[in-house]
Length: 321
Image 1 (cartoon, one colour):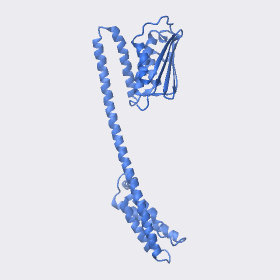
Image 2 (tube, one colour):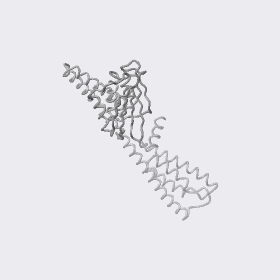
Image 3 (cartoon, helix red, strand yellow):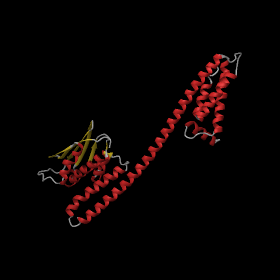
């Protein structure tokens, strides 16, 4: 019984053609039901000959296909002419109605078959898209794995080369680790980018969650912008740990962001840190902060206030990445 129900469901949904026996049985059942309805209507309108067979043709064609629909239409027409539930006999008017009935049945069967064909094509396309999406995910996973291995290799090679230059290595190592952490964060959410709050927590978390506050709505960053901002946040956080708010016991940091149209504005405010009396010559970190957002039609403004460092980052959020 369960197999019969599954076969009926597959045939009705058009996923698999039903057996010939089941299709014929269903068509006969539809014809019997239509004839019974016609008998009931004959008590009110004896001249109703073909109308009850339209639903029978529709359901038979939808379940068993156009061949079963054609046979059902032919048998229904014969029943409408031969079987009488009153005193009336077949005349020219009934044969004219028969021709009209078969014409409408032909359009019905064509429409049902066209719809079934469209459904089959949609299922084929959906299956192909699912397969291609699975293949794409497989390739992206493999690429991500290889990139991670390459980054580890680059990290190891640079460490070996700069072994005798600890000052240079101290500048390179944290930036490579920041890139790796951001890549891991992006890869955990299907390589589609990450939320700015998660990115900031990843960079600022080691300094203690009580040392900073984040203000802003949820904002999903595309991968390229997320990587760029991660480097900038790392530079700012590192400087805050060495010279700014995180280097003082009572130092605090507040990061806020707003979005207007496709423009993102991020404000980095440090307070209660050591005062900056003299600003040294711009180093690599400062140059990175100044130029990193140029690829996104953005700019960075850095001010050294008595309360601490104040930085405003503005850029365009790329769409369709």
